[in-house]
Amino acid sequence: MTVETTTAGILGLIAVMTAVTLVTRFGGVFLMSFVTINPRIESFINTMASSVLIAIIVPMAFSGDVGALAALVVTAILMLTLKKPLPAIAAGMAAAGLVRYVGFTVF
Amino acid sequence: MNVTTYSYRFQPGKVRYEFFRLLPISLFVVAFGAAFGLAAVQKGLEPLQAILMSTTVFAGASQFAAVDMWGSEVSLIPLMAVVFAINSRHLLMGASLYPMLREMPPGRRYGLLLFLTDANWAVSAQEYQSGKHNLEVILGGGLAIWLAWIFGTWLGVYFGGLLQDPKSLGLDMVLGCFLLAMALGGNKSPRILVAWTIAAVSSLAAWKWLPPHTHVVVGALAGGAVGFFWLEKKPHNNTGNANAEGEGSS
Image (cartoon, rainbow over all chains, first blue to last red; front, side, top):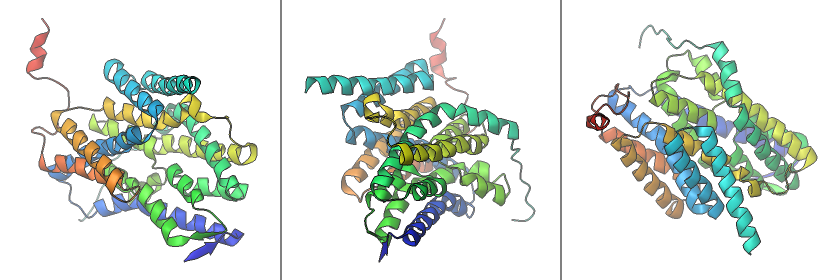
């Protein structure tokens, strides 16, 4: 089924996207309301939470360019040593910019 | 379930604090919003339609993917599938906040979830690991990011990309670096490290071999499975490394 991108069509598509996204925002909490929280579920939730971050970042590191990889590596090193997020993030972005700048002048 | 009392004490003052705390990262969200606004009008959306989409959908990666599928016609089911797949991480993010969210009435609970997005969730989830209950950041931080996303889209549709090449400044990496910093700032027990390894390997495998946009959910569930089968001995003792290593300093 296709929708023509007339004004009404586009508004309909935006409404559909909004609804689908709302289902994802509400769905996890809605389903959890049927689950009894015991230590095992709590442990699952807590490990899953930080695993979400890892599962976003690791493929990003592998699919991106050298600049992306440099940004993540520098952020990781500074975060583990300084334990301060803002300097770690700033240095990570600077590393991406620097690596890309150097890369552009070489080729 | 019979009579329920909701024990979460929501502090309005803290909402304002969290709004300003996430304001720096929101500045970068403005840049992404501008990039989205530009992409949307280039694909034929009217400026107001792009702004409406950012206002109501408020999920950047899925919006970029959606306008990528734009043409004179859009296939509805593939669009819904892509938006659902990219945003399915919200299901897990929401679920991970449930132990706190169940302490508030359903109306407020789902109202807060309207503002659920990666950055404010990452802060809340990370603080929960260290025993702090912070749902205020979902609202305050979420508002900051939402307004920045709308403002950025507005800039993008009317003024084009703010920067010639945001990648040259590393701007595309700000969210990745932010999420990584949040992950590494949390506790790192052997159990968590094993979970992360499993999550990393599974997400990479899913990214390589499974349908697109499934890797976050696959990796997160695989990591969560480690927690399901490997329980911490004392779940409420997160006060750090009070074990044999402590003798090292003399």
